[in-house]
Every structure is written in C-alpha cells, then in structure tokens.
Image 1 (cartoon, rainbow, N blue to C red):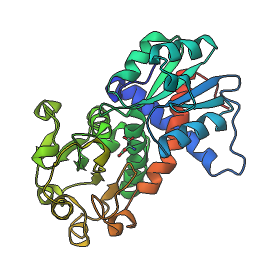
Image 2: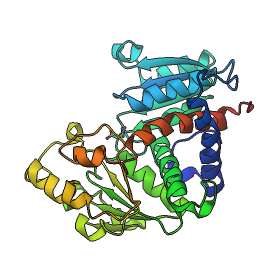
Image 3: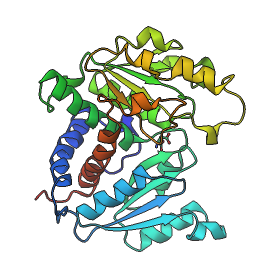
Length: 315
Ligand code: ASP
C-alpha cells in the first residue's frame, strides 16, 4: 500500500489486515509504557488545514507510540498563510525527507492531488465532503469488537459483518464519513441503509448500491448499528430542514426511539456530537453506545495504518 486516500481502494484482505494489526496495537493502549520501536527514524507530518480534535491527536499519538518523529502543521503558523500554494508547501516538506503526510483539507480531492506531487506516503485524514477512510476503519474496528462480544463469534473472521445491518443517519450531504463507511462496509459485507431528510441526501446516492430512506422508524428495529452523523452547520449555507426541533424528532435518538433498538444493537457517532440535536444524551451515554470505543479505536487503527504504509517491523 502506497497511500490511503479512499476506503474504496482497500481490498477485503487489506481492510482485514489493518483491523487485525489494529487489534495487536490495541493492547498497547492499556499498557503503562506505550511505546514500540516500530517506526523509529521515520518522520510523519500531520498537516491539518481544517479543525480536528480526535483525528489529529490520535494520529499524533499513533506515530509517537510507534517511535516515529511526528510534526504538526496547520494553516496558521505555516507559509500557506503567506500565500504559498499547497503544491509548493508539499514539495518543500517532501524535499526535507518526510516519510508520510497525514492530511486534512477543506477541499474534496485535495489530498489525492497532494499525493500525486510527493514521494512520501499520504493518508487522507478527511478531504472536504469526500472521504475519511481512517474514520470508517475505526468504526469497523469498534463494530467488529462489539459484534465479537455480542455474537461470541470472535473478532477475526471475515464473516463478522455478513448479514449485519448498519443504518447511517443524518446529514449525509456534507459527510465524508458516510462515503468512506459505505465503501468499506460494502467490502466487509454488511448491509447499509442511509437515512436522511431528502434535502440532506447526496446527489447520485441511488447509485451507491445501498438502501436509502427518509424514515428512521422504518429501519430502527432491524438495525445492528445505528450511526448518527453530525449536522454540519459550518458547511450549511441555507435551510436544509424547517426547525432543529423537527429534525431531532424525525432523525434524532430520543429515549422512545432508543427503546425500539433490538437488544445488542449499538449506537455510533464519529464526533464531534451536537448533543440534543442529532443525538440525545440518553443515546450518547447509553450502555450500548460505542462512541468512546470509537475514539479508543482511532489510535489503534491509525497505528495500524501507519504500520501498513511505512512497513515497520512488528515487535
Ligand atoms: N470528525 C468527522 C470528520 O472529520 C465527523 C464530523 O466532523 O462530523 O469528518
């Protein structure tokens, strides 16, 4: 693997290998001394041109726990704020001997473009409304562990996702998480249904090969996982739904809808959450909520991705 730009680029074998190695990395998280020599002498630059808490911190931790030298760059504080083009910035940092760039950018396609200019490996950490492949991988990791516990079927087999029903609910139009999840979950073999008001469905969604509905109540009882997505106010220019109250009623998880989930079904949210809008506190903090497990998985999965790209030796 040279780059990780799209979840759709991963074969079943590659995705499974990333999830399996992430299981091994996961054990490091509970150790007192969280350090492997795996990426000693390698340099990873995190370039975040958009805000991030989880993704940026977990990539930095992932690199550090594997002994890579990690450097963080954001738009402020770099020469892009003086007008330098993305291409010149990339070529400059590449020329210094960077081994891997982890890039988040506000424009869809910018990360793939950047990858075409450099010699180093590139990971897409979210490009506009396009893709966020490591988010989909960490979601799959958290789900796989959950299904493993619930079904007692172990966590390693390909069959873990077969027949599982995943409902992805909310602001799909502005979500890169949904695109990456659809691509990865199709590879893993689960069945995905997208749920959103018609105004928040991406154009061409009928061609994605997944179920689409605007009625959450239609799918809530059959779902094994309900993934709630954030209403991305910062990307909304105009009214996409009449009122927040109506949105919450139709597309949120208030206690009465929560009670209709089947036993063992899980709740996911990639964060950051708008509590009280797309997700109630009852749902976010429920015993079957995987939200903090997703955060924990973020470090293990990103360690595994860096390991797969940079080819360190396992210890
Ligand atoms: N953190 C995720 C992302 O960067 C989801 C979100 O922002 O709502 O795409």
